[in-house]
Amino acid sequence: MQAARPLVAGDPVRLGAYALVGRLGAGGQGVVYLGADSSGRQVAVKLMHAQLIEDSAARGRFVRELAALHRVAGFCTAQVLDADMAGAQPYIVSEYVPGRSLQDLVVGEGPRTGADLERLAIGTVTALTAIHQAGIVHRDFKPPNVLMGQDGPRVIDFGIALALDNSGTMTSQIVGTPAYMAPEQLVETGIGPPADLFAWGATMLYAATGHSPFEAGAYAAVVYRIMNVDPDLSALGGQLANVVGHCLAKDPVDRPGAQEVLLQLIGQTAPLASHPATVPVPPPQHFPTSAPSRESVPVLAPPPPQVPEHLLAPGPTRTFQPPPSAPVPATRSLGRSPAVVTGLALAVLLSILDLVALGPTAFDPLPRLGAAKASSSLLANAAFAGLGAATLVAAIGAWRGSRTAVWAIIALRAVRCGLWFAWISSGVRVQGNAIALHTVVPAIVIALLCWGLWRTRRT
Picture 1 (cartoon, helix red, strand yellow):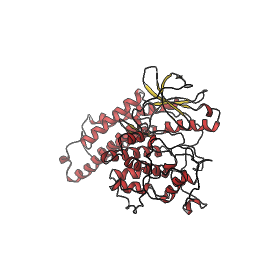
Picture 2 (cartoon, rainbow, N blue to C red):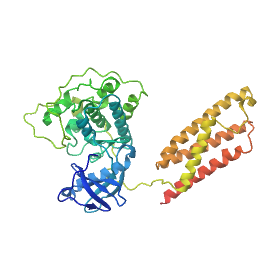
Picture 3 (cartoon, rainbow, N blue to C red):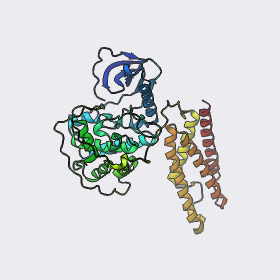
Picture 4 (cartoon, rainbow, N blue to C red):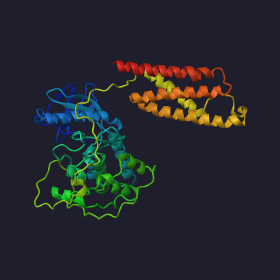
């Protein structure tokens, strides 16, 4: 976030347990202040505009923003620390992320190039992947909403992320920043994750060139460019240009998903088909130094936008089903009780032993098994190692509070025990101390994790 500016007349000096020491910015929903808790830790406090407090629709959007922030993984946004939705002054307290926005960085230091641009692209699309997997469509992805934190980019401002009705389309008005809106947002058809990928592509071009690819001054001219003009991708080059070109497709059906883009950028999937040659767009006559407004700009004799026929035709469109718009009740977090921590530690230890040994370490050496049993032992080793790797992956989710991940660990350990019993039933001679390692310890792990799940269910 940018450096805080002094408070102005009418600004509160305290909200709940947080002292407010400066202004970080303001938007359509509220003002963001730099605050500090009782220990002196800096936080960001978003206070709802006073004129919107009595507006039930605006308060509902504020509540849904809080719900969206709770659903999104903490590594890709500023984590929520506290909130007060019921008081006379609704506010959300989140982690303070030192660092400038992407827009301020480009304005101050110039366009991004080379490895800096590649890291930005991978970091931001990773955040979008996590956001979409949480069931959220951001709908206002743009350079001012990307904070360049010390540990990587963070996506902020989920103020309009859930302004969707149950059919997955926009409600009654166009919301977003015009120069970064997808064609389907402008014509109010079904809006889903592809709209965020369009905005991501436009943001990457801004980072590489210093100007929005569709910025044209008048609102109608911006709409015309979004609907009809393919921007010049030459500033990106290579694979990134190809991926961004696909993300800027006019038809949302033709855009890749965030996870597909991520895998493309890190070289884990076959490259997308080469994007067609684009029509260069001359840069705007002025360099923008502030974030584009969400509000519409009066237009003089706008050129009529040419909207693709299928976007206006009746019939089903590919839409994204959002989570319910009602306030989300508090979910039961797994927590880190002594039982859960101990169970996870033992499960991780057993898994590491499997991976290091590639199978049961207490058996007689393979040469003693004979040629017939040696090959089956290799298969068993591979199975034990695979179960160990899967347990380590599930342990990460369990440590973050996922109950599903804990159930997965319980199932994997049970399968591991079953595989071991099947193995020794085939006549393999086992050392005496292997019984404790392969039966008693896994049983303790399962018991501890089941106890932790049951305790969480009761709270």
